[in-house]
Length: 416
Image (cartoon, rainbow, N blue to C red; front, side):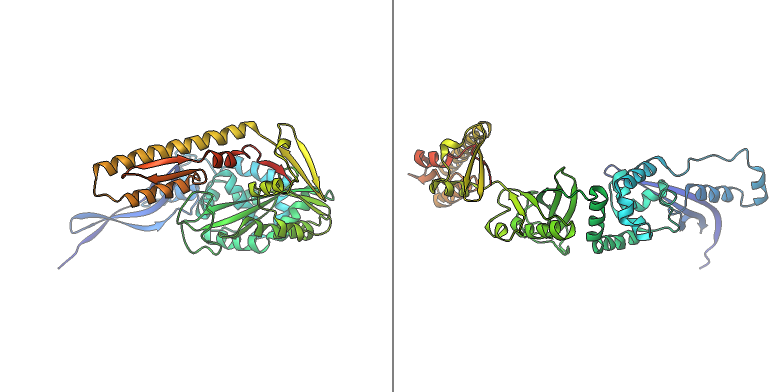
């Protein structure tokens, strides 16, 4: 069999694809040819890493491939194209310099890569690959005076460099911003972020604040100064409880930032007895105590319900000060939420009873079990009971238990 191939055309094709709100572009050098009477195409080279001027030069050369001498007389027909964008990159770079970020990261290649990663996150959020593409649109190399190019692999390696040098970078930023002025107050809190994959080093199943069931997560702690300016972040395994993250923050404040007489503010339930007893000399804490702790103090006679008013009240027990306040708005919200949950379970029981009536052979015990499980999830089982009588589910309310459950409504503001 004889296959006859003849060259037809070589040209540049620009492809565009959209993913969400992002548009991705690629430039390909394609070749059209005829084989056995049919026109076919194939890609010769990927020109996506070329600058717009380089691509236009190739396009111009292809248009005059039969007579390249003619290129010398095309000055009047050459089209002008906009070069790399300067405004955004230059503006963000100047802010980074003013904040001391450039000095903290250093001016070697790794430091400049890290700075571009910061700038790319400000200019356009995205992946490492998107940061590379941004550098092809914005004048990253010129603004940062980078003598060589980079790809996404360089940026991923740079993340490892950042991790290894995190403590030094955070300390340098802290010193540049604060000078010799050491803060007397630090604020600390944690959050979590769920993961789609399962191979993350810190990924574990834990209390998921995102409400994503059956997803591994990481726990992220942020330490801020008295102005709310972040001074350090740290990633923990996804099953790490809040109090377990506190000790490393105290160590940072003392050793990394050199602060010796400070107060650390932590969220409710974060600073407990173990954490308090391990505080270095000169360290103090402020936290909100939990409802069981409030009840314990009331039972011991240290606090009284009458002290919870709209105005602040202060109680001192040994060396611990308690700041009390009742929030009437929050008390009303809690009462309405309780009523709403009760109405929800009432509607659910109406549906269950209707189903039991229409299906005489259906299991009453199963319906009772699922209803009680729902009651527990809604946290109503302390003062609401579900019973069965003649294949009918009924609600019984314990008013004394309800009174006990609600007597601390709005008394959620106790600072220790």
